[in-house]
Length: 319
Image 1 (cartoon, rainbow, N blue to C red):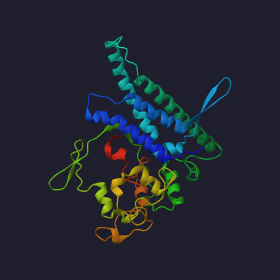
Image 2 (cartoon, helix red, strand yellow):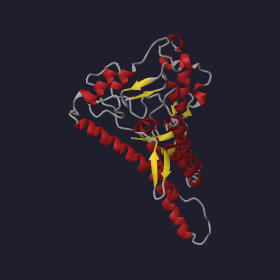
Image 3 (cartoon, helix red, strand yellow):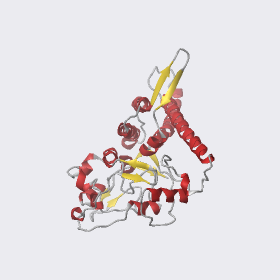
């Protein structure tokens, strides 16, 4: 049974918010383990089902490698597990100091256990998918040959020839030939970063990246007609080998107030670049194929640098 990636993305956003909110308000406090566990169990019930007979209970996952790549939920859960282990250690120290207090409730050790079990289930799926791919290659396919990359193989390309085969099959522009492979995946940390401050000259200043001082917010960029209204059109990514529905991606990744008042068909998901909606009345920018073949797009943001999920804007990143 399939499930909504939008619902999964919503749970992922709730989890990141829960983990970061307390730390932002008070660096000495920690998130609520009970609420954190509830969200993780909601994710688990959405992605896994249990079947029982007289003697055994088996867990069957509805997760796929494609969903893991598309939503980035695995990275979020991995960050949750790391943070849970840190809080669990602190929790044990507090319990040893307050023996016999009689306080009972959800512990961080429970969060760690459930998170770890869920991640192990998903990792097994990825491992099985990798084994199946290897078996396919063993049936007379040379991994260095362009024909190796089949339509069903999702994820980062293994080599330049495979990447080139994807780009050609997807009818993309080859700005660089042979193409430059995309960079490694980006891991999202759970810690929440503060919003930038605006200087008198209009520049935006980020506390943890002082050299980066843009003069326009993402919301302003969209409302000024950047990308000619085409940015969130439906695409096939040569980086991940996955087809994306523009409306779904936009709903899952963009805060509502950023696109409020904009006509979706002409200013956000148009297949045709419209110079008339651009603030300066011009057509500018390179094609998706140009960006992909140049190695400028990662699997975490298949639409490119402007695909700002709430987790990208409001949460820390690490490579």
